[in-house]
Length: 150
Image (cartoon, rainbow, N blue to C red; front, side, top):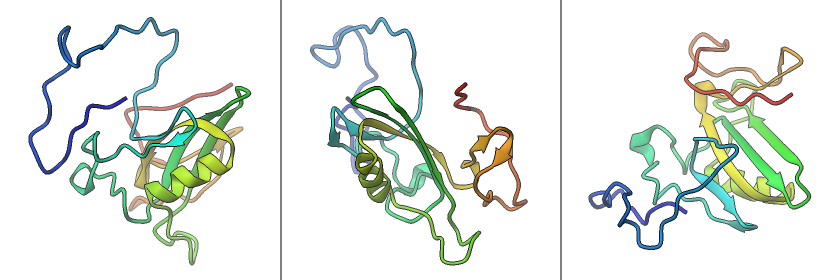
């Protein structure tokens, strides 16, 4: 669970052995770095405020944007989602993070995480694009992270 940060005040201390109280070390077999959390343990969480992922971060949580997300259902199915935005296709403006969280919940996700969005949103299936990229070149662009499923 993210720290209870807010963009209206200074961030809480960096995690350490003593902060936050009750913290524990995970022995993870897999991990993913992204955010914000959309759904945690079956409940819509949408933690963009606590994760300081507001407009200044580029996430633009409350405006319609191209979005990418990953989730898991109770029975272990992996849900991958991507949507266009910014009118690449007429009348397709994208989604807010709240809309994305509700949609992932409607797919049966018990945990879901926002991935990158905007011009970085892209999904290839068997090497073929599933949406029109919305960056200024209207094509895939290099990004620092990728989620690969086989």
